[in-house]
Length: 201
Image (tube, rainbow, N blue to C red; front, side, top):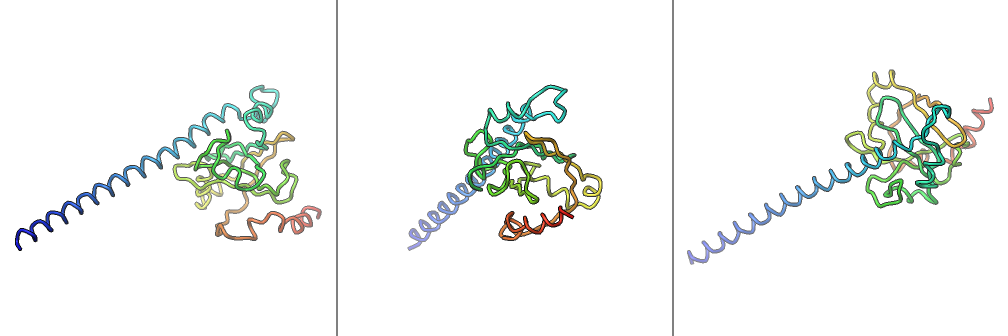
């Protein structure tokens, strides 16, 4: 009987040890995989910066023509000063087109910054909605967190939106936290009537 008890104890210890190694291995893989996702997003961003159009055409440098040669779905470039938000903006046929695809069209968990498929690509709508993943280490739209700090918000309220049609100064006037399921905020068409009235005044 003692022999069986010792055998069962040894087997139990072995199973626990194996489970421990599996958990450690999985945790290590998860950390490695996560770092790969962030590295891939950073690499794409760094590569795309060489194609960033210049606000002043007289300075030379990249143009939207070159940027759209990489991907014709690029409709703008957005920059928020003193953040790492400095990305091309794409628009797909629907809002799933670039949620997990980079600017090259390759699968990427980081996705791309993209304009709602219901919006006008020239940003002529009163309410245009951009999407981007919230990532740590200032990836994609991760630096939007900075605006939750009142001092940062007060001192950093400018940016730039460049489109093939023109260059627009951005002014950040509010920081709002909402649920991702908020149908009102994420429904551009619901705002058009109200905002059109406001802009016509």
